[in-house]
Amino acid sequence: MSKKGKIRVALGSLLALTLVVTCAAVYQSGSKSTPNEKELVKENEEDSVDQAIKTEEREETEDANTSDVEGTRKKEKEPTAEEKEILEEVTEQATETVEEPAAESASVETQNQPVISQTVDLNFTESSLMQWPVNGQVVLDYNMENTIYFPTLNVYKLNPAVAISAEVGTPVAAVANGKVLSIVENEETGTTVTMDMGNGYQAVYGQLKDVPFQTEEYVSAGSVLGYVNEPTKYYTKEGTNLYFALTKDGMPLDPMQYLP
Image 1 (cartoon, rainbow, N blue to C red):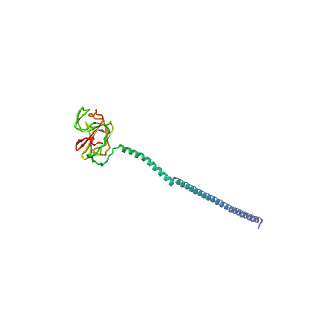
Image 2: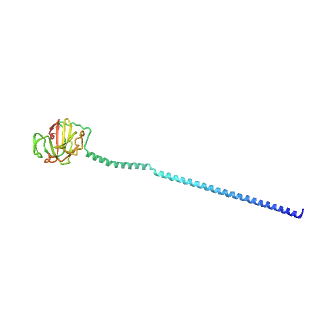
């Protein structure tokens, strides 16, 4: 082999050796860097997992705390048995306080209203006594046998009733149990109420106003039938008075015989 040939073989071998060494170095470098990158990726994944776990634990803790707060609030809103009892007592007292004035008001109204009954005993007899319809002086006496003097009319005539002096607005009481037969306007006696007292006895009240009853209504003894009105023109000189008459089967009776 020539000298040039030997040199070429040597150079080729050297070049091949260099190439082999270089490849080996590159391979080792790649092998070493790959594990490092894998470890870095692994560490990043572990950090992400840890962070996710911590975040999930934090959310669960917050949810637990929130549940505790809500549960506490609900418990605080529910009154205890003692509080419920106190609340019931206060409510009952308030109800009684509201109802008491209403009851008092109803009582006052009842006192001011006439006593009306759907069924009262109408059993007036010859031995029965009436109560006075008003308290006052008799200014005109009953007399169906002899005439008496009427100052306003300036005449003497028979009188089937009595005139009892009373101021305007004086309450007029029912003299006995009765049933309203009629309420009429009479020229001489003004507003006049006729009551059936049973057994043929009737009472007549004249010169009234503000009568709170209607026909066919039952009235208990002592109930207010109305109030004394201004006298009609037939009784101006006699003054304000109640006209009161009593009859039995249509025949006049002396009311004074049945008054205490």
